[in-house]
Image: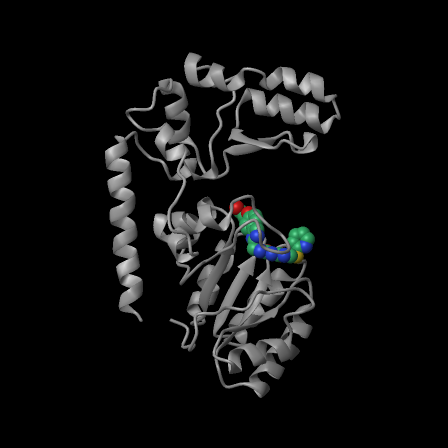
Length: 290
Ligand code: TUI
């Protein structure tokens, strides 16, 4: 797609990603990137010229979309026929046709599944899915949750990190056999990637649950500095309320971010079979490339 030797794209780091670094990364076989950040278009033009002087290899420009100069830089890269554009901190939808007409390969950096889907629809050539552990401006999704949803992987991701097995919770809550109120199971099925909240960060006992009335009130009170004892009243017995009584409004609907990947209630047998089949298929694909 990009004409590079190694599938390594450099980040668009403000102040760091200038011509020397970008050219060095491209010369090393990756995709070097000039980070336009909040710089004026004239600075970016000079950097592009300098990279072209330093390398014949493909390179790119990262456009930080909340920059006051974003529009000028977006037009500049089309004019300069920069091979690749990556974007951050927003949606590049309105520039897409301009860039595609200039023959530019467009790789939006996304932190959510919603933006990933929108980018696919509007003609992105590839995506960078950036997890919350990244530096700089971030979303809330972890890489382990975001990447599998973007590429439809699964357990294979954990094995590639060196694990020999996986612990799975949320997927099994929405199983046929789990003795859990159907309201709870339905919350998991409906959840999107942005629908969980962490309560209790200030108390040293953070808890992730699907957002509802309880998490909303808890977080408001936590923000206001309400004492621990009062916060505790909101969550006491909350899991039982949700699991047993099906009170998913006031109860604690604990679930991982992976709830977004759970689309239907399945038997435990189907869950395990699907997971292992998919992982085996993907991992076979990997060993074929060796
Ligand atoms: O953009 C980055 N990393 C960055 S940009 C940056 S400069 C900056 N400084 C102060 C405030 C904000 C930015 C430093 N690091 N990574 C890609 C990324 N994009 N992370 C998060 C997002 C993002 C966030 C919201 C993308 C789109 C979005 O909403 C767009 C929409 O319309 O849905």
